Image (cartoon, rainbow, N blue to C red; front, side, top):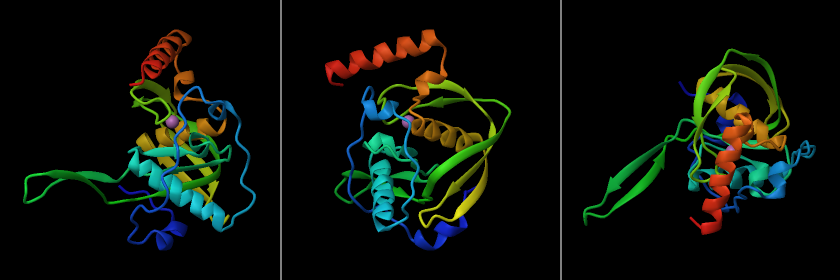
Length: 201
Ligand code: NI
């Protein structure tokens, strides 16, 4: 089932990703460890940033991207857990990957309330390319947030949507997913990632 947020429907009718590809910061960039600032100005610049973040997320490709991951310490994240990738083969035999069925979501100044239950889900992060690990989080949450016009919304989320919102919301508090693991696992995976990064792959 698709998640829809009424205020976005109009802005994202027949949406296709457009914008500027932003640089994605990987661990241990200092911006990933900072508590992000609330958004106070809902202007055209904010809309451009949101569109560019979505574009960057789809290009990556990923299902969620928080502003600190593109070097901006702001309480914003974008998400799409519904889009599909299709392999298209041309007449000459070459093939290409085409993205479709977009359902972009934008969360500004989110606050998570009412965490219920427990779920184990394998997570990855665009700031930790190549690292995947099962993380335990709340199965269902309620999230209050603003859209890019500043209008308030409340969304009930479960399963993957809930997991993804909790993962992205952590980025706004300077927390990365590996910090949700046992200290032993966290240290092992951090070491593995930094070693891999040093080698340049
Ligand atoms: Ni992440």
